[in-house]
Image (tube, rainbow, N blue to C red):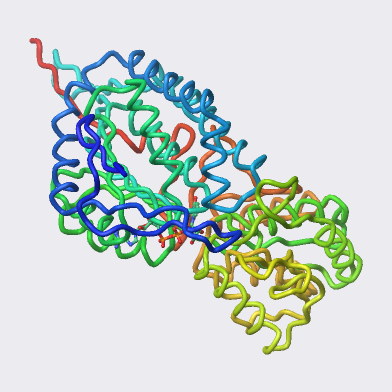
Length: 475
Ligand code: NAD
């Protein structure tokens, strides 16, 4: 199995393979060989060698390359969706949406070809012009997480490539198959010149080697907070620029004047979509005492309505991605119950769920308090822990009681409270009266320990450039 792409040539990874499992059955789908140290080194060198010519291309030619990549993904939608569905466990319909989103993202980023502008600033000297131009960063190492594998790869590749950088991609070892196949298709169709997009496979050790290579100028990673911290510490040795999209523990405040049906729909989606394995998932539901019981009933009704099952069937949720994730989520539920939480619906190990596979039904827990572990750590599972609140001050204080800062939700129709929350919530992304789902032209970026920078919109694309100042003396 060739899973390493260096300067347009496919190679078999020289190190031992890592198995990829079907989370619905626990059966091994295949084993993906890991790249050796030498292969990682050569992949970075290939990217560095290809970078000047790629950067010298007219920007519209790079945009054409991105559009060709988008077409390539769309033409192979079914195959890629099946791979995503098999390795992540998500329903085929949702996996198809992932492919569509990746294609749209490439189309959007292609439009930046004529939009990256410089500046002219006043000079201190006569007969002098000072230009601030934007140039590529150089070689980008891209490291992805397993929940939206194809989209996370494209979120990094599109802004990196349009701005004239070249790349080495290391997909997550848990769900690498769709990314490997997408890069295979892109390379077969010659969407980009050899060396512009390189691929190495493997786990954290391969990622660490890649990040430490002195020719890597920027590291962009999506994953767990603790991995992000390790990457950042490592980057101190080369001073590579670091962009991190990390975890979260999003609060969702349901104020007493909220439209409870709207809030229940939005929070059910934000807590259970992709089996809760979304960085913006609502993980702490703070509900005003006056509407607590009413809201909880509505949330339970929606949770019970969701169909859980094999990815091929017409279901809403599949299994969790792997055994590690399943154990983490199951233990979080059990510990919350032991600490005084009440399981209102859902859970793991239910007779209605298949015996093999990593199944957890959408779970609603009440009587949750800020002292419980479930309140304090990212669970990344289909759990909605509900906490009763009495005042808006308490809601804001509890919402902010986390070192994470990715996203937050607020449901209210009180304009003054909404504006207060907008100012006082310490999160990079705030959804008011709606569920999660960021826009391409926004900026999905975490504050605090949820990361540094995002990949989308103007701020995402400019991050893949650096400023060069040129002093033109003509007197
Ligand atoms: P992870 O941190 O375990 O792995 C992410 C990637 O980092 C993998 O490719 C892994 O091989 C690599 N890696 C591990 N150690 C490394 C090292 N020392 N150096 C370089 N690379 C290394 O994360 P995961 O379990 O795959 O993903 C789940 C996490 O991702 C959750 O916390 C979730 O919130 C977060 N996430 C965040 C966003 C976002 O946009 N903020 C999006 C999706 C997922």
